[in-house]
Length: 244
Image 1: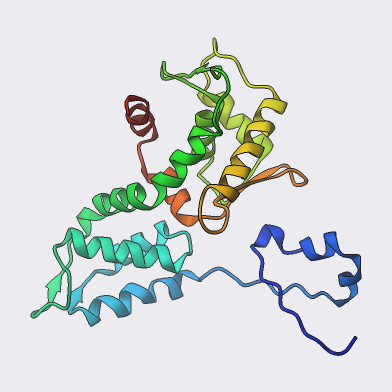
Image 2: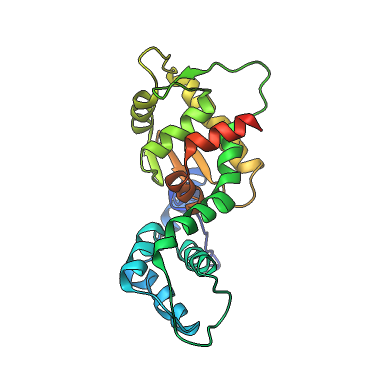
């Protein structure tokens, strides 16, 4: 009433929470979405950065990196930096140096393991169990509990930043063996609620994963977690985690 202007910053799926929790805000609220980076803008990072290091990178390699960066500039910078390290480039080159784009796969794996795996593993473990969890038989012959199953199913969907419950359940059904037991809806949503709590309390920063009950969807806000789930060999990583 005295002319005070307040800016509230929120992740997209929480943009209208102020109206939900405080009706007085509704008539004084304007949503201003911040768009994701356009591909042309994202590609400016390597187009300007590599020449500054006296490094030559072809446009096809730049386009490939852009396609994997999920419209996120921080992830694009990480890919560029890791590609340089894979090419033994740690600073400005004395002479023009052509970068080898064929090692992008190794760069992707390094980023996935170092940036995304810790969050993935914490979510996959779920909360401390009071009793032995039920395992489900998968089509590949392995057995996993519901938390591992959810993470694998989310990976099957893309992974995407937003996955509906129906999409998640369909992905689950595709990886569970015909003789395996499909979890009930209350089991899935309960596990997702526990994972949301873990993401909020046990993982630093903005929650990497959130189950939005009202929207019946799973939101993944962390681009590095999405990147990991896309590029890592989850079956091998799950086996390694069990051995450890």
